[in-house]
Image 1 (tube, rainbow, N blue to C red):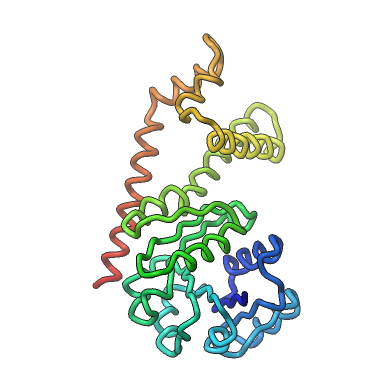
Image 2: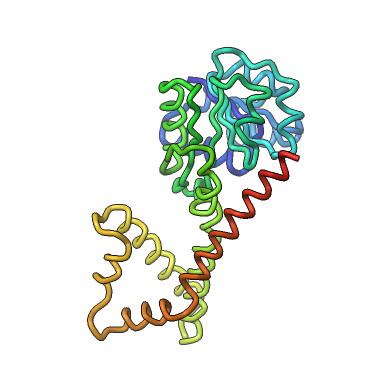
Length: 267
C-alpha cells in the first residue's frame, strides 16, 4: 500500500511517524508534496522519504492520499487535480465539510477525518465521518491508518461539532485543569515541574481507568471518596461552585462557535 500526503505539516508528520513506527507503512511507500521546494528538500533529508514537485504526482503514486493543507488552500489545491478512480482521499482539513469535498472528489472516494493534538504522542482521538458511499473496505483502511496514532470512532457529520468539543478542543481544557492544580501545589511549596508531572500522570491514569472500568465516571468518584475524607470534601466544594455549569457552558460555547463557523462558510 502506497500512502501520499498533500501537505506535510505537524499533523501529517505525526500520522506518518505513527504509520512508520507501527510498521503499517514502509518509508519507501510514502510520498509527499509541500508548497515550497525548500521545505520539501529539508523534509526529504530529515525523514529519508520521497518528496515530489506536484500534488498530482502524489495522487498518481498513491493508493491512499491524506489531504493535509490549510482550509483556505483546499479549493486551490483540489481544483487543479485529476483524481484517479482507485485513490482514496482522507481529508484532515478542519472545517472543510463533505459537501465541499464532493465538488472535487467523487463521493465514494473520500472520508472526512478529524484527529486531535494528541496524535503527536500516538494518543489521538480521531473521528471518521460516516460516508454511505464509501466501501466498508475503504472505511477499514482509514480506521487502520488512524489507529496508528490512537483511538478511532465513526460518527455522522452532524455530530462533528460535539466531537470537536469533546476531543478536538477539550485538550486545552485538560491542560488548564492540570496547570491550575499544579500552580496550587506551588502555593504549598512544591516545584511547578514536579507538580505538573504528578498531576499529568494522575489525569493520564484516570482516563485509562474510566476507559477500562465497567462503572460510570460518577460511580468511580465514590471509589476514591472515603467517608469524612479529603476527596469528598473537594468534590462537594466543586459541586457547590459553578464548576459543572461552567464546564457545560464551555462545551455549549464550542458547539455554538462551530455551528456559526459552518454557517459562515456556507455564505
